[in-house]
Length: 437
Image 1: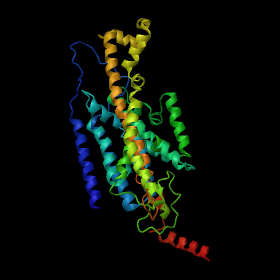
Image 2: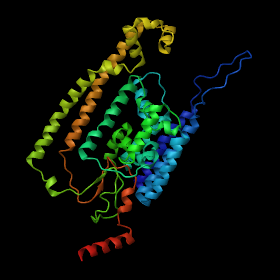
Image 3: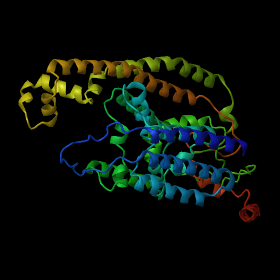
Image 4: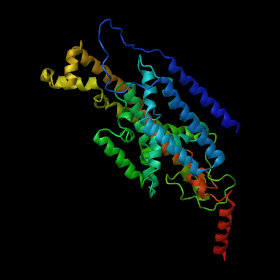
């Protein structure tokens, strides 16, 4: 209880920082004309008031705090489900998927590497609060507060289990996606997480056709492969996995001592329940020790090779930047400078920059991608190395436990546990007695 209140206090402290954005002055006030000029009506809606963004932050805090109470004290899957529906309606359909903790990674990166970019403290709060909660209580954000996760959770129909090696291989992609998103944001190229958000078209009831198809496709897959975006794509989920691994507290399948009834072993559609280990699996031998040492020594090799390979593709990656793309286009086809139908070329020709200046800027951006490629490739190599190293580490378990990295704190497994439910416990003992007889 003490740690619960400490966590809540820290969260409210971060939210109070977010409220400072409401005091920011208007950066570009409307000019005062001395003529009969009338301001035309805007074709798009006005930006949301900073005070309302603070309301969003407060709602996030309340949802997370209430979910923590439901998980650790109420232990109610039904209430967790209703809270998640509320969060989906509010953050998804009412707020149209923005503010979004998943996409905030890019804002944080641009604020660190960009110049003159002002990051609202509400965005900082949406980035930090779920991670802080994960460090204390696991991936609570994924269970109820994330509209991207909730919309997938609600369509789970008949989940199938994937082979462990398939899950491990696909589980590397969120880290790769995270690295790419950071690289593109750091070079001010694009916010690829937001651009390829599969559900924003559903939340906003309109988007480009290919994005609508992508969103519907993921939901259809999610009927049989539970939460595919969360498990195998989401870059923010990669961060939550790391933080949740070291969580001080976490959802437990049983409120008391596990009786090894095995009723929960197939209850999780995300394969996030670790089974009791066989003594033979954890018996130390020279082969396991040799495997561990080999993988540990290979990590620096993976880091260097990954950095070298990705850095070598810097020119290809840099083409995603509009200046690099336009420079390459005009160098290869100079006659296009007379093409007045191309908006990008027309905008460039109307600017004060020359083609030489554009090429110089493109070279600078390519160099940023080259250096950033070393970090991206090294990060990918490190993740692969640590993943392999984890295959040589065996943890002794005598009961069924929720895997702290994979568990979304949805509470499904709790209702399968008869401990604490006397009626179900009597039925379980009766079944065991019938089997024995």
